[in-house]
Amino acid sequence: MNGHTNTLQIVGPKDQFPKVTLMEPVSSGYVMLALEGDHRPPIGFFIQSGRKTRLIGDLKALAQSLWTKRDVLDVSVFKALIVPPGRGAFLKKRPNVEVARFDIVMLVEFGSLEAAQRVSETPQWQETFASAEQNSHKSVNISATNTRHIGPVDHSRDGVFLFNYFYAESLDINLKFWNYTAGWLQGQTGHDNSTVLLPHEASKLPYTIINHCRWDRLS
Image (cartoon, rainbow, N blue to C red; front, side, top):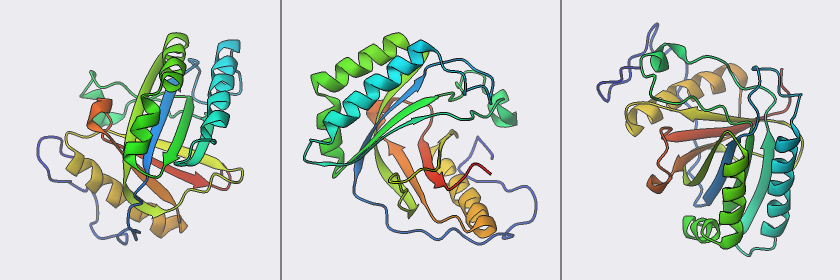
């Protein structure tokens, strides 16, 4: 990517892969807690500290209570199997940008962004986030909408769930880069689901989009 203009520069043959096939974005609103509970090697997350176990327990308890809310469409809590190592050439030139190494994620889908923001402002949510912030190495509290949609991500059955935190010099570049890589992935594997989250500006994150999708198995 060229980080100084709004032009995406592709290295290698152009138009080698088909354009990604998209559905209309859904009108849902989302809140997301992303936590770095343990510092581990990339494949070392099968070892879990007592602190991380308690964090996950707190989020699961919150998830159970959220199911009683009228506008809640889905609540899921995830823990990491693998967090990719390194920064890559692009981020090596930008040492001030933190790499996302979150190993716990709670994602809640609501009927609208307004409903999501109302819940994220409640004492219960704020108390849970304050406790998570105190007991994790890093934490972020995100409200978001859906900006790109290949297909719904099915949380109703076991699978391997992916969160990609995309950084670029502008939202436009990030979306162009996602479109290109999603076209490659869809063309090569027939991948049929992805919900790209656009964090609300109040989230103040370095990552302008977060890709979430599902695989049946790790391989």
